[in-house]
Image (cartoon, rainbow, N blue to C red; front, side, top):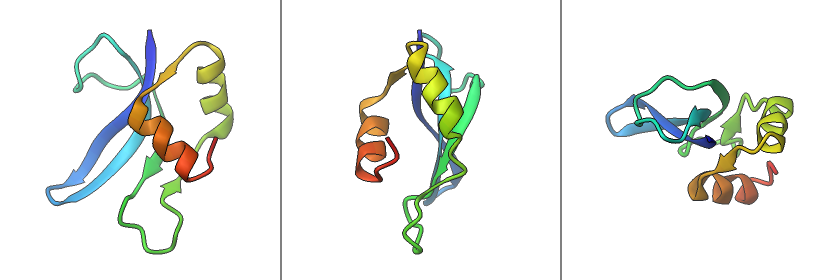
Amino acid sequence: MVAIRFQRIGKPKVAKFRLVAVESRRGPKTPPLEVLAAYDPKAKDGEKITNMKKERFDTWVKTGAQLSPAAQRLLKKEKAI
């Protein structure tokens, strides 16, 4: 099963995240199937979600990919879905 979840990137104490589509049964260090968006929680300009591939995101959801609870909350809060 495919899951859409966060992947942490960035330096220590300067967290940045990617929203990625991954196989849910694999470990957290497995390479993603596709990078769907970038998320910077400390962005000052109000645009915390950047580079979102809306068409690819919709395609993954339509094919049965499950959103993690944290990703679902963030996307609703930022009005991305």
